[in-house]
Amino acid sequence: MKPNTSLLDLFLETQILDRVPRSGYFLRGVPEAESVTEHSWHVLFLVWALGQRIPGLDVSRAIEIALIHDLAEVRIGDLPRTANRYFEEGAKARAERAAMDEILAPMTEESRALHDEYTAARTAEARLVKACDKLQLMIKVLAYEGWGAGGLGEFWDNEANFPDDEFEPVAEVVRDLRRRHAARSPRGA
Image (cartoon, rainbow, N blue to C red; front, side, top):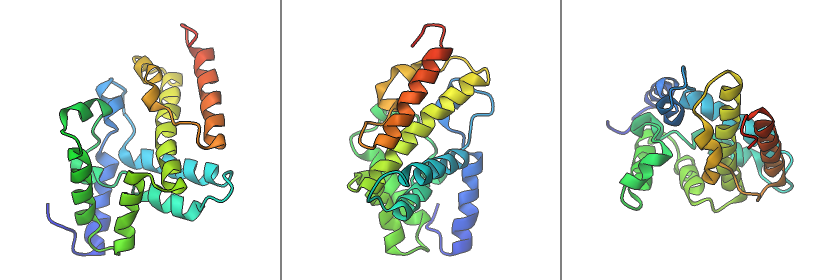
């Protein structure tokens, strides 16, 4: 694909995200796995809601970062975390950067820099988006289990799926999430 040359090109291309399933769920047989668009909306909502509870955080900036955090997936797809070991160091990040440069070509350099900020996690706003990205994953797993999906236990067993404790409002939701899962789980964890 070539770089987008107009805003309409950009707007049309982003429609593809409605049809890109979140691969981790899809690979585990979850019927009608959420799309990247659905995931992104939920991440935006988490950033907005939790960001307001973090003193000194620029919520508007965090929302901008969240808005584009998975935009590269319009061209490279949603790669499951298990695929990362097959890429040489930095290859996925370089591919995402190249895709973002082409996708966001009609936008300002500042808009394109949002992805770099997210990737580097050098600001509290970017780190909150990363935390909410993980948090949304686990909230969705709990929801899928509540709706009857099985085979998702490995999500709970992988600590990399959980955000760290940098932001207390996020940590509070994670604690509640783990409690609810434990209460539902036949194995008690």
